[in-house]
Length: 140
Image 1 (cartoon, rainbow, N blue to C red):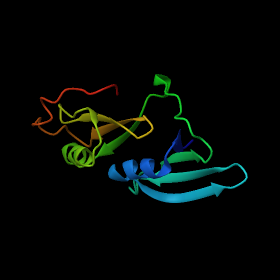
Image 2 (tube, rainbow, N blue to C red):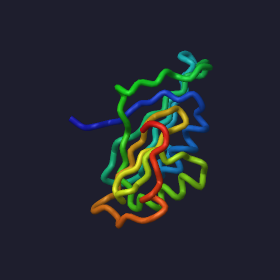
Image 3 (tube, one colour):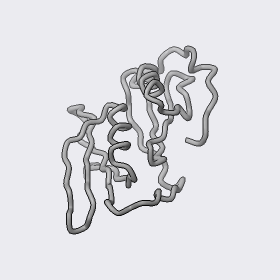
Image 4 (tube, rainbow, N blue to C red):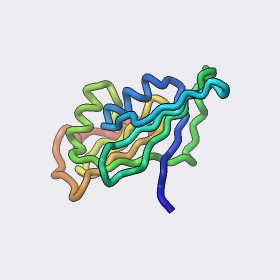
């Protein structure tokens, strides 16, 4: 058995692609399905040891946001420098819902409310400001 992908439905494909590109994911393939009126976009980390992809499903006629459920949980990515990535996300206007106070873990949400866990590769980085004193925002 081999893990293939996680699928999430997105309301605004461009906003979702912009968000996930900030995380470092890249589009590897796209399929438009005219008869079903939807598009599938597959994103990858590009890491040679990581064959898994994130599948964004955009239903062309969907106008209302999808309902949220905590039963989905989250998607998680290991990152090389959690502080640098959180800085880049914050500068782009992304809310850091659970800051990396411990130098190891942070949570953000995609434009569609999908919870994304960011985990520092290897050992945690030494705690530092502004992250140490930054409170949680919203749910994650």
